[in-house]
Image 1 (cartoon, rainbow, N blue to C red):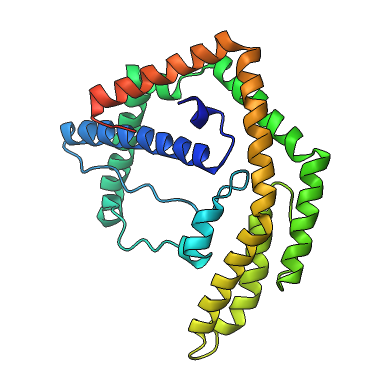
Image 2: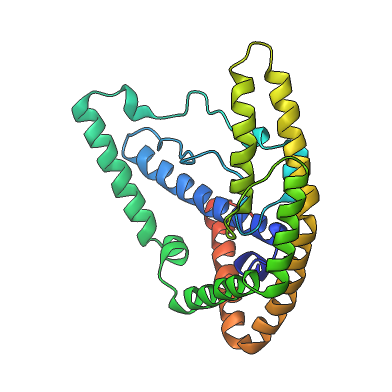
Length: 254
């Protein structure tokens, strides 16, 4: 559980995302049961606000290479939202029911574990992300980033990335090249080929950069855990208890 709480690479971050999805699943199970008891339909689907791309601080380059940038686009057809088919007064009552059931879950034992304040854990996480920022600003990482940028330009994708999100900067360049192709009849295959080439260029150019960051983060995390072992152990115990409750109460497993 600790690597998911204090990620050092894409795999750790992905594990943390799975944990967050478990929390969401538990909320859905609890709120659905509450609404059903009140004679109301289940809660509407929770959709992401935007198309997901690799998390800026922990880009999953292997996944980018496999799927390309276009592969991260998700199409949601007919998401479940019972309120959209209700009259005004019925919809207001339904929304009030959803709010009430969410509040009840938040006040439950599992809800308090998930959403309740934990200043000690929050402080540790803030410290860890501060350490990550220091690593990104270190001379070796900055030099590796400049080499990666030159490599990207050599592959035909020059860009000026934000240090905190170079994937998004690279993606904008690729999308800029793709846009005219999508507007041309029969050019979609060319756009997909360009997208694939861009994804491979990103991986080829930034693999060394990510490898260096991963190595420095792993070393620093070991030191971080040793510096405050008691607080780290308490954080681990809190989340282990949360996972146990998610499994026992709602059948949700990580």
